[in-house]
Image (cartoon, rainbow, N blue to C red; front, top):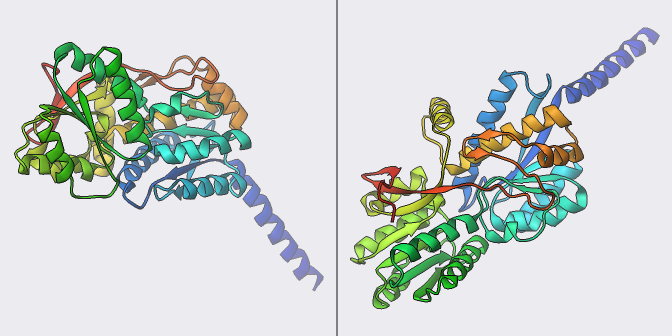
Length: 372
């Protein structure tokens, strides 16, 4: 009997020690992504980029010999659900860092990240508001929307100073903020010849707004849609209505689904996109295609870079939230696909970058040789 008790105690002790050892051998971080709902297409891209980066990092030895793991939670594209998911990752899983997505979710989580001392990494939200207020634990790795709207306003005014432009935007946080910033930037050039039209998320019929754009005589449009389906539906319905307009847009339009759904209606759209390192971009696209039999959009690229940046920081500075925060503010050289990433000043924690024009031609995303 005593021997049996001793054996049981030994087994329990072995399991406890094994569990502790397993925890010590793993570095866990979290991710709150829209894995279901209307924004799931972005969640899938973000997750693919993260998973590919984690696989690459672990194959090379992980974080100083410890495996990197990501615990995923579904925000469903909803701010409240996102906050609950973030709190679960902090309280239950005790992660030092969370990757986040979507403007409304990021803005809702940000105060919680500061209060709970958890690093929050934005790899998709583009609202200019994210970089207006000082950030403490939020680091923005997605090129902010204000960079793209400023680029568009400057180039459009330079090329067409007297032409009317219709701004067609999604009535959500990112769409409204980007519309406001574009109108503000354009107005500063003295150009007040614009109209604005909005639509609600998840609608499928845009003909009323498109007809108003036509009746206002706008020959140019700036499309700030939310989902790939909305981009595609607007472009198709523009073509069906015979709307004579040159559409411009921003980097979110470049997804496989936009092309598949819009088909020839997408041809001729011109949009801004971050400049990238050709060699790193080509290498990543090859790795992505090998794993997923597809090509990577801006969300997959940004999340892939983000994980590699975090891995570098954790190797050099440590794996607590304070270590990571300090490391991100201290690191001054990280060659990402979209260029060097650095956050030298506390509070100013948004990446910068240059843009160029791309276009859609015969179902392909290509460099626009002549710009606007």
